Amino acid sequence: MARRKKPRLMLAVETSCDETSAAVLDQGKILSNIILSQDEIHSPYGGVVPELASRQHIKSIDYVVRESLTQAGADLGDIDLYAVTQGPGLIGSLLVGLTFVKGLAYYFRKPIIGVNHLEAHIEACFVENEGIEFPVLALLVSGGHTSLYFLEKPLSYRLLGKTRDDAAGECLDKVAKFLQLGYPGGPVIEKLARGGDSRRFHFSLPRMKTAGYDFSFSGLKTAALKTIRENNLTAEHPRLGDFLASFEETVVRALLENVHKALQEFRPASLILCGGVARNSRLRSAFSELASGYALPAFVPSPRLCTDNAGMVGALGWKKYLADPSSGTDLDLDAFPR
Ligand code: AMP
Ligand code: MG
Image 1 (cartoon, protein in one colour):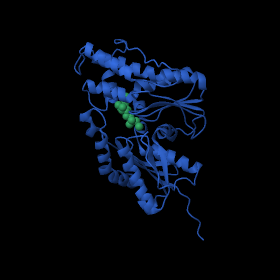
Image 2 (cartoon, protein in one colour):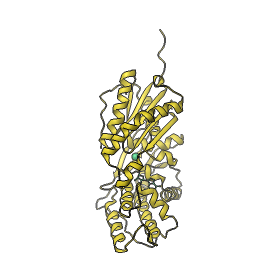
Image 3 (cartoon, protein in one colour):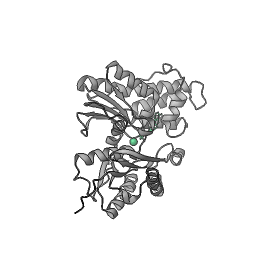
Image 4 (cartoon, protein in one colour):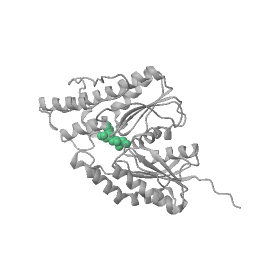
């Protein structure tokens, strides 16, 4: 009897928020990684509109998956297993990717690996750096999440703290929306803050009443909106660059304060910064500076892998599969929004 071929080709799908993405991987190595952003659709609203996001995923998913296969030179029939983001994310958006992949897995009788979106963001760092030493302290900063994780060993994620209210990306997006600068706010703020004097406006750092590693950004957002009103700041104001530089600097300091604190307690061997906001150059350089102050290596994914993408989902899916090859035959796999 012919021996069954060992699985190696994987199709991964990510639709947790407003990027439709599909990737093909060969034994965990990314062959193609297509990312279709919905920024233009949500831009007029200054934030992601969940119903529009899920409808757009439905329109795009077929094309995005097809394109990922074409770029990888693969056919659907070649795919040995699937990985898909299960959550957290917008429920309607998650269900589009999950249902699509379930249909394929059912038809071709192949396993599916469910992947946690936040763990996948951390995995993006391992995609480009094989020798990251454990234990790892990982700061994840995205549009919907701001979390600090400790990884004692591969695939073990201990959540040390998360935001109590707004995520850092959300805080940037809301301030940009208030100033009518466009969506997503983070990149616009970064561009307009360049060359601005970050000491011109003063913001106090968010203070949590309880000990631990949680974050809070709603107080900072309120303070920023108050400063905008009091100084009549607009998109054309000559001091806008100074204001945005001061605000961006405070967001970065608030994020890194918890990393400083956790470094004392957890003594990791490596540091990771990931998520959409990790594209920000002020944050990237402050993070690297902090790490070199502790003589620790710091890893940040390249900007494309910071964004929501199926490549990171597949990379983690593959590791999960190797760790437990019997996993992944569950067609009852559910989405979890939180
Ligand atoms: P994600 O949720 O991981 O897709 O990340 C999206 C978030 O990242 C949004 O809040 C964006 O405003 C933010 N973002 C993207 N690029 C940058 C940047 N260059 N600087 C700051 N924030 C950014
Ligand atoms: Mg994300």
